[in-house]
Length: 347
Image (cartoon, rainbow, N blue to C red; front, side):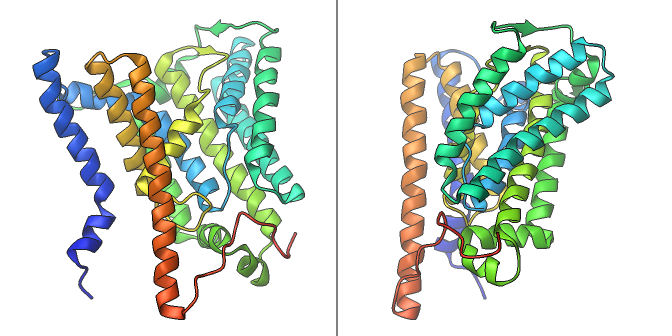
């Protein structure tokens, strides 16, 4: 069956927005500040600077599609970053530091999932609480002081900040890691039973429970899997910057969630694709880069990003209402709301 123009427009709206933003800044930047925005070097730089954000988005997408959310992500990767810096400074081999750092992220994120499953409440408050805990843990690890750790192993640079000549400029190695992580996340979502259960959990947890899948175990597994991507993201981030400090990564979760929602990932679960998240995060990245190019006051940048987040929430709400109205026309009644609510079985 052929798709209508409106269907194509809906599917690719955010891609059109991304292209329009690139075109807008491509026109404005040379006129206003005398520098080209659409140079190959700048576009490669945008990708390199935001590779770790996209990898974070892979993890957050799993959580959002499964009907949850995580406000502690930025503090989690900050804690992981300090822990890896301390292990690296203690002389541990880089590979062991890498494994331990990612494993720590898996454990910390899995803990959020475990508490979520145990208390059976929406994880907003849970992850807000662990946000405070992780912030304190980060400073305790560094002796109660704000510190910057430098002179890290070259392995970090190799994974996040190594320049790869590509003819039109230098591509950061973190972009290659990003592509691999997005491909892995897409494969898990689209080609495995686990991925199908993630979508099902976000849409209808009762049906997942009735099918014999443990809702509690699924939630823990989703958060733990997200933790893996969080850990990899911080490795790339450390490699890109070349150092670690106590606040590295804090606040990233809001940018990534806004980008994911802009791209069409539904808050509360059940809808969206990994590619949607990538486009949404890149929209935020281009907005940030373009406003910096134009030397806009930082507070205006906050206003614009706030508007973008509000637009993402409005779009998510309108999509939910449209789906409910469509279902009502077919069945005569709107579908009952699912998650985030207490599951009925399979703990």
